[in-house]
Image 1 (cartoon, rainbow, N blue to C red):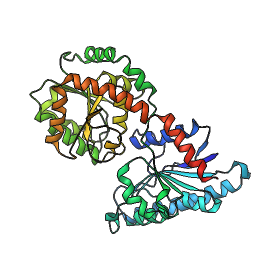
Image 2 (image 1 turned 120 degrees about the vertical axis):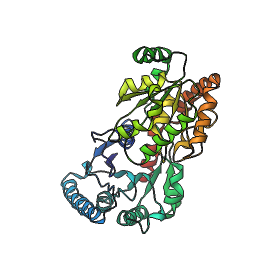
Image 3 (image 1 turned 90 degrees about the vertical axis):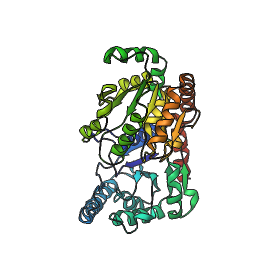
Length: 379
């Protein structure tokens, strides 16, 4: 099977780290692991941040021209070398797919979308062009694979048949996080030595980019929440950076002696920080699907998040962590407090979290599900 892959929001080859880039790479890896031939068709970014209609029209024009060029290139190939399926990752009003539908129709191959969202409130909004395009695209889509259960009510009415929507639990390549969990005490001690931390105080961890919008809003909730439990002993490592770094750091000025800014961390070192922490905390404003929560749990760390977005799809409230009311800093602080005052419960949740990820959210399981769904379109 040959799959043509495209991500209009952000290319998997983008130099800028993000959850979107990570999930795109994970999808490709999951398919390749099943011996599926995946070709990244374009790095064209169709994302429009500000809702400017002229800019959106320009992106549409460029995308449609690219589609024509790609189609001519594909048609020059022998039939056996052409894609069997077009696969687009992350489709919504700010990043419509101006390329895939045209090529899929011309080649008469299935058009598949992973992670689509559609909100009627955008009908007359500034992204109307992209919103209308997504509505049309979904009506012709052969399969929509969802990772966030909250997207389903908006997407399924747009589909030709509701059963074309199929949910797959969010997933990750858990190996390095699981390996780090086996040596968590050593990594905690290394962090204590490296940063001269208080060994008796719980070590909290946040991993998130620092950019305007939902991330900054999440940091605001986090800062307000921690200020409400400042009488408790704790210390926080913050992994991440971005254009809003100074703004984010200023939010924690009253707590500065207890916050450690680690900057960008990736790979094995990131897994070690997850394993070293006693508790992962992130308010997750409009987070979908919450990759940081998957990573933390895979590393054997209990979590505190919110019940908004896709977080409830990956965190078992009361078993692997606690979820607060969305955008409620007082309730978020209350959930963190509960675990800081009950270290045994926190440790048991971390153990349950590792098992939860191993059973339900591994890339190997997702790959099998993806392959089964895609092959079903070719028979």
